[in-house]
Figure 1 (tube, rainbow, N blue to C red):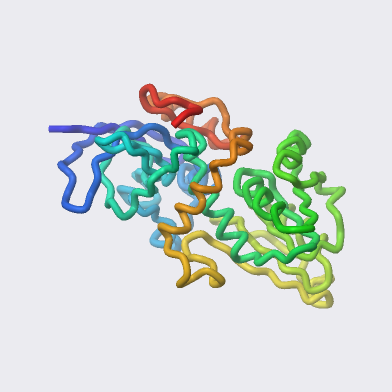
Figure 2 (figure 1 turned 60 degrees about the vertical axis):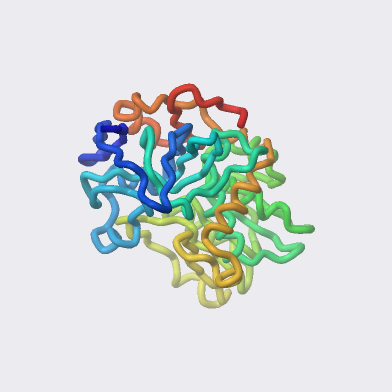
Length: 321
């Protein structure tokens, strides 16, 4: 019988690789061999630590995960894999050496997008949905709080708005170089500019959300892109929040933003995210990769912080299609 090897989270902070049967594909499925997967530090860190609230188990289930939250669970959603004809696909599948997936969920990777860069597609899809929810205007003063992968990708899209001034805020001064590469300014939280008309909060911290509120202009829109899991941040909604008529708006990639709902399908949104990754500037977000077999020992360190981490399978080329 054909088998595959998959990474499972089995307890808080503990993972293991399991060998499992891989049946023949059903009609409408593709058999895929994995080239690379990406680690989504935000959601995967909450799953790995067991910090997903029970009330959100059904909502936070990944499309092709196995097991059950909290444990044991096979979780992840950033796989680039190839079919028998050598066509590469992006699939919302966990870390696994080979798998079957519905053909409708297998989005072809454009030839111009290298395999490792393509693992950013799930994060880019999130950034794209944030931009749709934010509805930026030409010439706006825009602030992005949190220079993680989603914050950096979101800033890179918002910086394309004509005459917009985009500032990226983070506690890590080394992110300034990345901000500049993507057409944005950079500031530490203490130096965050005031009177910002559109703010995206992506730091997943209470302090970051406070920075967003304190930097907001009159009737500013604050787009909350973070998911706090079991944390309950305390916010100063009794200070200038009401007098400035601020709007705090949730955004989440599980639903297409209202402005594009009914106009773009989930598959079309993901395909557009992959097209956006043809820009080689995004290679600056990729860390040196980790082999799949090293994941059980490496995952706690990989989820602790950094940029976008790629998991490799066999001899997939890092920077070529």
